[in-house]
Image 1 (cartoon, rainbow, N blue to C red):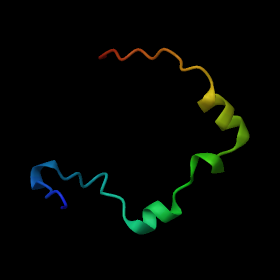
Image 2: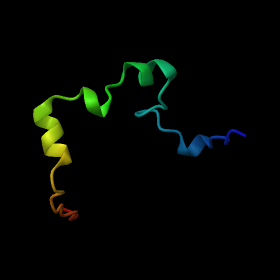
Image 3: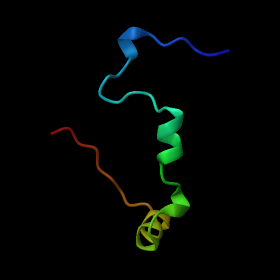
Image 4: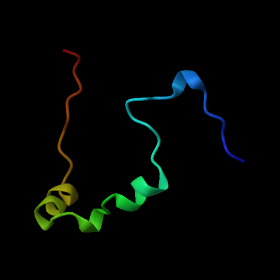
Length: 51
């Protein structure tokens, strides 16, 4: 059963992905080797401060 979307939660700036969007997207394995090594490395500490 599909969930109904609520109009107040729809985001026109970032719409839901279509089947064509998913087909066109890159997989993790399709990324350049230099980026893969950075993404697979140890996570860095990120500070989420409000400015």
